[in-house]
Length: 476
Image (tube, rainbow, N blue to C red):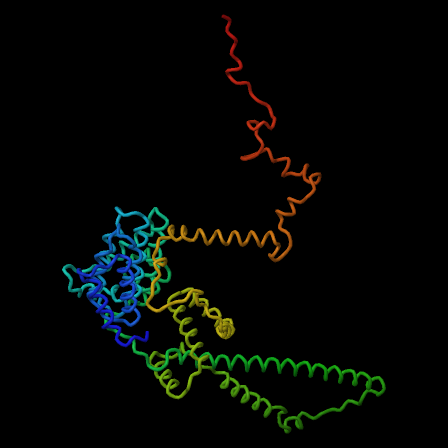
């Protein structure tokens, strides 16, 4: 990251790597490839001679070919021209994703294609494939559908790799897939005309991304807290009024025992008409206070605003407010949640139901947790681990030693009674007295079924006389 001239350094190392006079061993070549591709990926360099050089080592029987494919993925970024990437995709598809290759090679090739397309989304653009300046135009739609068809392969590793590629295309460019392969999310994005940007296109942000969502979040939070406070105050007032009414009723009951009943007074209806209506002013004041409360309870709703109004609001907030680190964290979470709702119709329907029930802010309040969902391993920008594109079966074989370590650790914890809780049901059954279990249903049915007691093992039972035993002894 702190190199003075990464472009010059990458060019000099690649020149030495391509020189036929330089006597470099294969292991050193792999290290130099890793170094050059890491430079290109981290600093987003343009080194167009690197990609044809990597294609020479992408053979199905090449030694450490998985590492070379990982280096090719490292060298890809958004500023690489799609014409250079098309050559790599064709080479991988021809040398790996064919029926003449083994299942492990096919899975590695599909995973490498998916990783390259994820780093260079412009290669999935149909316009770019038509404008490609190669010897033959690259048909992206046919290529994607051929790779997606491997999701129904008989081998499990190839099937998993194909399904991963299909899920990626559903989110990136679902129009390339057939209708039956798009799924629920892909169909929704297809109707929304979602597609990757062409090479050189950039999305220009008007203001800070998510500033309008943060303003809506804070407005709903303030309204929610105010409503909760008013409900608690109303509950206290009602409780006090009930106490006062009960005390007054007791006093009236005590006074009525001592006093006599008052005389009835006849009122003239004309006098009642002259008197003003009692409580009319109070009713008007109550209505005005309700109107004021309803005006105060109106909160910002971005769903009722046009995109132009949202952009204008975002610019206004970004230019008049200083955001803190916690504000930026909230904005990232809110933007991610809105993106999930846009891509997944089930998430959008769940949000609508929460808003209808008045539980929208309860859902928003869950975003305040500072727990990060980052993985435990250290992620380096531009670096690709060869295990990430490896076949699923090979990955399982490699993790066998790790599984054995976990088994041994769990066994030690079990023997040392370090686990939480008491004894298990199996332990209780094993320690039970024999006289309590000899007449049990499990013991009586032990000889039945597969794996039970059988006559062949000498456990008794009636035996049928064989044909040899029935033969008469011949006399000589």
